Length: 488
Image 1 (cartoon, rainbow, N blue to C red):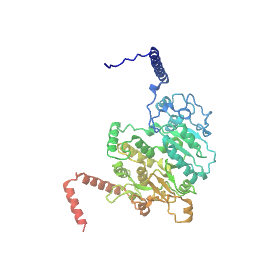
Image 2: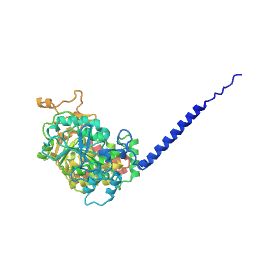
Image 3: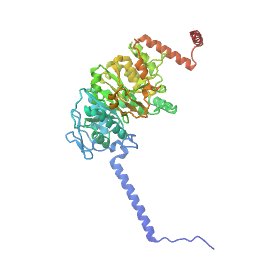
Image 4: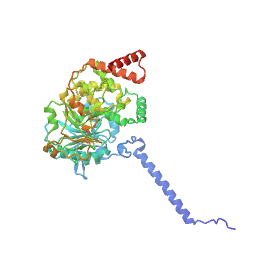
């Protein structure tokens, strides 16, 4: 009979297995004790600030400021021989637990809002003094709202911007983030320009859901928009970004001493040499806002923005000489706007009581969170209401690309052909059916009054009733007769 043979295991093998098992137990216990001593269980929740999960409490040196930090001992990083220092006049001494410090600052009483914001973000604010002297004529800067993970995309953009323009003037850069910048980001960016560079976080209240917005209701709205396929419809961070660019970036402490900003985003291309100073051009020409691309917004992202804007114009008795640029034949918003990923504009205009009043009105309407209002239509409609048409400038001589939208100036002169290098296979969006640039060029000025806003709002409301099938029968019958006789 064949059976299963039982193998004898030598006692030395059994002893070895037991020793290995015992060693593993000791290692696990040691790791648990170390985690407890480091306070990992009390660490902040991980954030999606980079491609993978990262913990803010693990940031080192310039980002987390281990132990006590003093401005007199700036951090020097050997990789790029870059020196980062504190800003004059800002707080320079911080305890080890920076997040507890931040909470303490926010719970304290301050003489001014600016003082509180400076104290709050000071531990994560760093400055690099560029090697080149400033040669510009205006108090201006490039403003970049960016994530750490977008470093590679921005380096390509920065190289073009430096080569095409800033090597002649050395305007400074201001980088803003809702999370601390990493050492790699700051070192690499600072080493890529001879201009001054400053890195800072955004004050918490500028990047948070306000108390007058119901969080549960806002989450449900995001879920609905996400399921309906609206781009970024599900995203809370995208809504924070749109609201921040609409009403808060110009209040950042680093921008308060500036008159002009040039918004730059990672991954964009500049196709032409800019052999003059656009900031100086805007200042001398009495301009307050500028753009390079005009296109139509996605209607599903702003269902009621136009209604609220018309109501605002009625209540404030707003008049304009070119608001008709944004109006369709039935009083509706035609969705045209200036794409704000490129804009050079006056910070004084954005800080003006008129603009702040419009933004506050929209903010209280909750559309940044209950819908997905973008900063581009907000800036554009505000310009239409509050600026004269000749205060808005189209930079026809700047070649530019963002995502799949690109434009190239008319290369009808030898000078322009030398200045620009546009891709040969590029489709110029200026002549695309989706471009609003032709409408801008053909626009004839005409006075728009509060009465025009009332009529537009009436037409919009009637159109919405017609579309929903809730129009009163007698009104629907009357409309059909009017439409019938209007055909003759």
